[in-house]
Image (tube, rainbow, N blue to C red; front, side, top):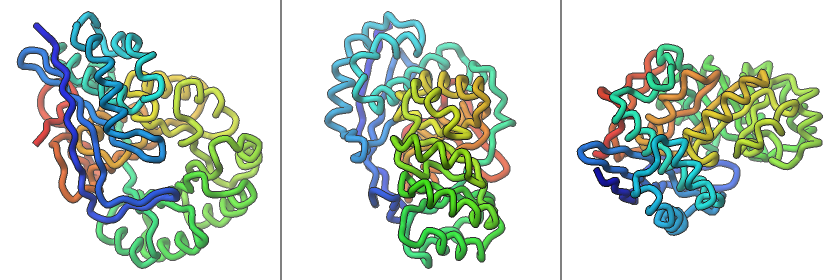
Length: 338
């Protein structure tokens, strides 16, 4: 039965302007890959990202180059397709991620199994996702937090008054805090801030320094009062080993790594090195978020709140509450476009 690749572009409207250390946005553009074989459909997603130079144009161009390999149907597994297309997507892992997720969705539908079941994972062990509070005025950040009562908040930092933000937010909740400085601090700041952040019941610091500041991270790793998790420093598979001894754990972003196939390899390697594991999301629809949920039983921490930040989703999929992650019925990943 012939394989068909379709590329769909969608706009994701956000509930609030989302600001981190290097960008702000009100609408997120996203690319959906749709793989069809007979009556079976696999969906995958990757958002555009100006910081990483990922646009609809260059993602589409990479996928079009891969189309003959995809549609000839000679690949028997998502991992095999990933390897066949490795060179094509060498400079565009975001496009490869969308294709890889769609391939896993279609592959496990053909197997008649949910993805987590095929991978031998237990969905009852999924950790509770954090809910992200982007940078804004302190008043707006407090309001965002009060808008959704959640047990874990991830606070985006990288301002001139980061500690003031955490002190004020702490007055309004007993929830667990995680902070993400998005490369904005120096080693001296991170070490000094960690002392008070620990007292303010912060669980860990994510990517406090620039991704290439390895000497600084040695100091932070040695002297921080809190665990440190790599994000921008851990993009691809070869980065995992580099992060060992500099970070206590890694945050894998499937879009940056190139999809579920390399993401699984990174998580297993980190576990073998005794590191904590996390998967983070972009501001994605329920297509990308549902894919993350299927591999979440492998994780110590998870950040899969992307669809929760949207004012309107383009898909149905996993439903997330503090107590429960409820998967859609049927095999595969299970997300469906609305």
